[in-house]
Length: 233
Image 1 (cartoon, rainbow, N blue to C red):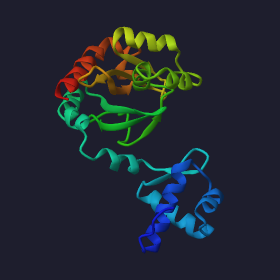
Image 2: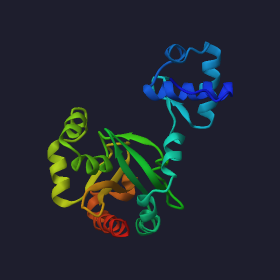
Image 3: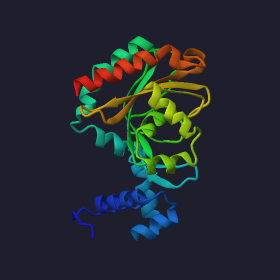
């Protein structure tokens, strides 16, 4: 049973957050889960959407918004501290967007992201939760995950277990127009002191700049950046 603070509107807003955290839902189901009147549930969900604590998926169902993860990753995190110097350097070297991802179950969450000063960008908001079924960052994180997670994701992934074996063999991954049309990326695994993969560092940008074989251009820089973060950890 959830506690009540005595501030009615706050308790109701928290109830909405808990309800949509269970799974995405439409307004009718949101009312059923929270016990709130339709107008109240909609008003609170819409207000949470303004603050990016709630959002809507392609089917218009309410879900948690990116600000929830953004707030979560702002706490003291050694991984973020270790990457604070490395990511800006990588952005300057490549002139492209750079990101740091961590796996959560069968998704990956963007912990940090930096964009180039000019030109087309591949913007991934901090806190964004992306599927593990496409993209070089997904391949890296999945290649070093447990067998059950790999099996669950590969059922709908745009790549095969052979691609994951290739990632483990060469130590990096690339993708071209997998996650988004016109976008290419390269990623490398970040390890902790025990050699366990805990994150993926990525460079992404337009195919016109990255090329059809982005790994040939940026893989060495990605691997070096990943090792630098590991050393700083």
